[in-house]
Length: 245
Image (cartoon, rainbow, N blue to C red):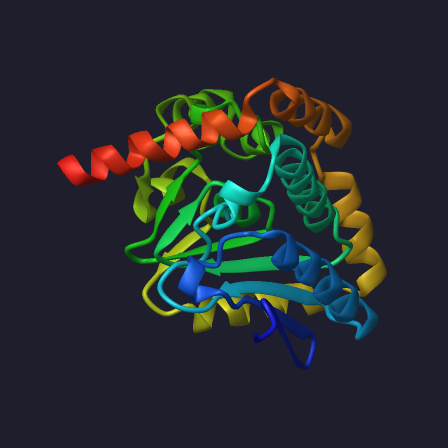
């Protein structure tokens, strides 16, 4: 089996590619661990810009539940908590981050998109945060800090997908493009304009997040009895809606 994540260095840029297109690049335990390892490699190599991309049509369709039948509530909760810790790490990186996302950018994939500095949506991309439908409270504080309390509530309460244009309008995306080359070049130029120590200091002072509170809210939500059952019910309902559509 090929690696779930690719890491490519190009001068000051390190590109981390989600490489499970057959699963919509959904975040499973192996992929989360591989992203963590890739981040170690990018920082050790002195990257000034960490860029996230996804192979195939979809950037990331959320949490990988392909093995849901074989795991219990405890393993599922741990997997979700581990994703939150990864998101917090990316959000606090001392270097510039960017993401280019097309297709479906859902759930944990949308949260991964939201933690980056430069959030480039490809035309035709769609974004959704369906986690609250099965009782999950993941990254809500960061999302509210990014788009505002009202917009965050509307996104999370509705759970419906929004277009790339709408994501740009509310501040979830920083650009919508057909071709990301120019946006990536601009992000890289900004990343290397200042010395690394200054970039790290600016990031530390401009980051607005309460990691402990976000983790506590998530832990409470996954600790509620019946996590797996809620996810199974949500998936069944979503499948029924697709068949009717």
